[in-house]
Length: 316
Image 1: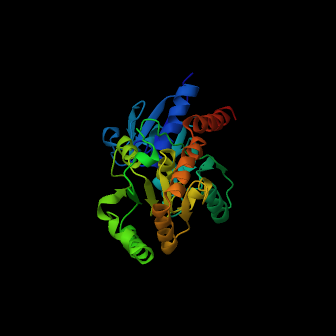
Image 2: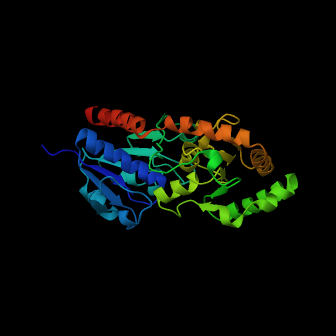
Image 3: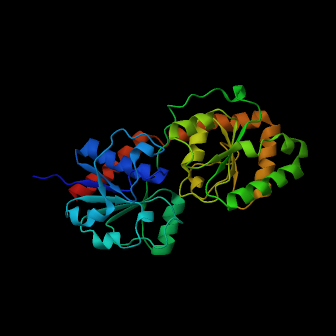
């Protein structure tokens, strides 16, 4: 008997959400023994990705997919890869992992199974589409990065995490002005131009090494379905300040493991940054709680939850 095949749309796209979809397919391959094929969305190459893949699977072109899939096969897809028609035109089992809320115009409602990446996304999907979804959070893995104790990192060293363009640079300028109003001396000591960390600009291992080398991680990302990189910063023992990005509300605990605020409170973020720079004991305490928070989002937990879902799909 021919086994069902797992197809993962955009498995090798250079984005954290696509990597999580790859990991679902990998779990199906390793735990259930099912063949895995990566669907190329726009000619992406795993060799030029930000991520290392435990196994590089056979690829197929997106245009070939509708004629290849069989009713027993499973297509795993993020909503950003569908204009609403993939579920309608692909006659197979279909699973959507909803990893954002602003990366698609209309949710493809022709899928059989849905899961949300965070409670914020879950609420958004329920309120917008009257669709109930379970939450399966992504995982972070920071074990490969070399870390040093927080106090041994360069004093006052900062990364400003930027996701997207345009608005991000304007926010940085506004933050610089606000920090100057709170403490002009500190504002002049910050290397504003040399401390920018742009999303998607580094290989994953390099990104983790960079984050682990500095004391502070200021997230200026306005909206995240979940927010993997800020959680990775916490896992690396870096003090996190900035915006919660909506999805980050699942793991951020202001005053316990971070100092984050809701957008657009730039003045509040400036006050928090100055406070952390002035009160090192506070910043070190916040940073020390990050690894414990990140430990609740392990790869093992992620795989266990998804294997349960996959078993239900194929046995149901």
